[in-house]
Image (tube, rainbow, N blue to C red; front, top):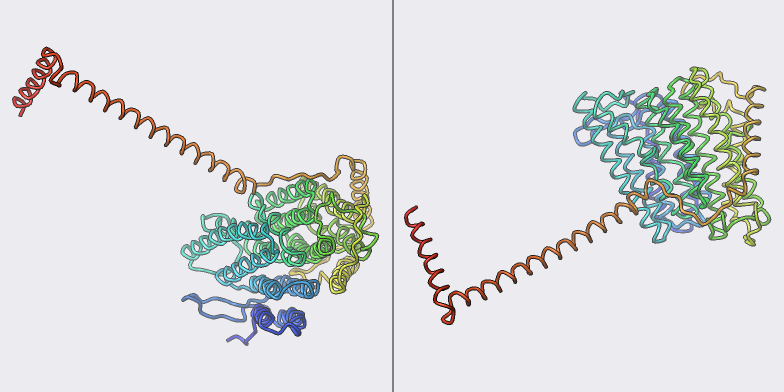
Amino acid sequence: MFEFVMPPAFVMITGALVVALSREAIRPVLALITPLITLYAVWQVPDGVQLTTTFLGYEIQMVEGSDLRRLFATVFAIMGFGGVLFAFRQSKWHELSAALMYASGAIGVSFAGDLITLFIFWELMALFSTVVVWCGGTETARAAGIRYAIIHLVGGIILKIGIEGFYVATGSLEIQALTLDSFATWMIFIGVLINAAAPPISAWLADAYPESSPMGGVFLSAFTTKTAVLALILLFPGQPLLIWIGLFMIFYGIIFALLENDMRRILSYSIVNQVGFMVTGIGIGTELALNGAAAHAFTHIIYKALLFMSAGAVLYQTGVRKCSELGGLFRTMPLTTICGTIGALAISSFPWTSGFISKSMISSSAAYEHLSVVWFLLVAASAGVFLHAGIKFPWFVFFQKDSGLRPPEAPWNMRIAMILFAAGCIVLGVFPQLLYSLLPYPVDYVPYTADHVVTQLQLLLFAGLAFFVLLPLMKRTETVSLDVDWIYRRAIPALSGKIDRALGRAREALVRMGLSAGSVIVAGLRQNSYRYFSSRAPMGHTAFWMAVVLAAFLVLSLLV
């Protein structure tokens, strides 16, 4: 017998619908209140299965509470509020409503007690995140949204095949730790990794997110990849393969972010890089590592949203997104510069910021498990993160050369959202116990030891020095970075076109050859028949061929 608990996702869905149907004058208030009411509902969910129902003949668990699930649902609700605050005066009603529906899908996944419920909310996210991409309102946004939808449709099909196969094999739909010992669990694993933006199926992220509106990118940065992180924690904790997938994601994201010229594509590749840290922690699988992965998802949502807010504010005020065309904005956008810099420091694990706490938990877990190679790569990657996000993003956008642009500060609601999230980055970094109290396992980790802080500062100082020494080589130019999506966006269509044209030419050549051969045969028959059988042909030839014909008839009659 369960006490009735209102699913927090349903609260968000109701709010999204009300926002869509409400009058313009009260829409902002409703949009801001909805995530706050949802946050209250999140914290009313106790541990264990709280709500079950029947769906298509299956007994499904709509709401299951735990510390881990509340942690993710909490940050998703906070993100919903911050995103709406940043966007409510600039976004149209359908973008706000779609963003809240998108957030409801993430919260629904957080509390899903079985694989079917997880899949339903998984697809809800895919549907409305596509709408958010399309709200970019440009032709490139429309095309990117279609590609985004196709990728997530394929990912959803793979996940559904895995779920059905697992149910057929075990008779269970329960969300539990799985092992990669069957085709079904591999399908589930791959389906989740597609949403986590694990290479080679990760280009959808850098393809779609930068094409959204300046406000839409803030929402997109938060939900899809982090729900995948939660699913990996629930389904595949301690899976060693994830360590190497995560490390690959880290360096893949760093390299492409360093090559990029578009400020929002830099941040998009940075998402891949940061999710790689979480995936690595899940692969290590100890309590400290899983705490670190969950904590890093929490902190990452806040500082990455802050970075997308600062980039969105710049884009909204200038209409420019390429680093080669930006610079010197600190003169007229000082608050955006400060907030963006705080986000950059947090993502770089600068001490006394939130990123320092969560990322240190993951790297320390590798050291405690004597995974020396993994630990070394994680530490080296921290320097790479500082290069591409900690320095490159604020330097080329707000400082470097004077671009001549003199935009005013962002509107007041954008500024308040950035201030709140910047404060969150610092508060969680200075008072890590606030974060520890939300984590799924008890925490006795002490990040602020003299040795750790000094080592991290030395690493960041060295990375900063390397950046400015190599600055001439890192000058932004009008370049295009080729990612895996080049294969299906350019190579396959180009190759298909060449094959089609080649087949067309071959078909025309065959037709010409056939017609030519037929023409020769007909001409030959006409000329030879005239030569041998016409009344003017020599009698000798005619008699010869008549004899041949009669002989043929004679042979045939004997055979028959």
